[in-house]
Length: 96
Image (cartoon, rainbow, N blue to C red; front, side, top):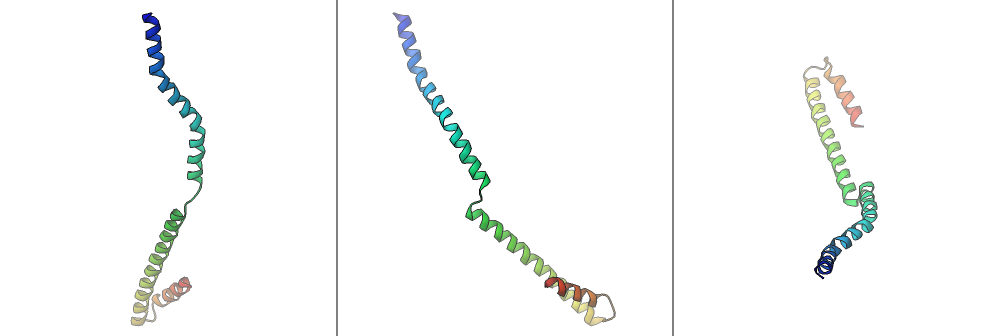
């Protein structure tokens, strides 16, 4: 009698574990597919952040070129015979 009682207690105690394991096994493929879709797709906010970084990078480059061109223009104004005047032309072409 005590053996039957002990077996019943063990079965009742492990039934929750078995149910949890079964649920995990059933939902695992769905979780994998969902995670893969998240990794492979770009959300609108991620795309906006990426575009914002690209714009800031372009603005930084334009500012650097402008400062370099201004410096070359000052050097060219002081001495038109030096290479600074050619550099001004190069920088103007690079600005587009």
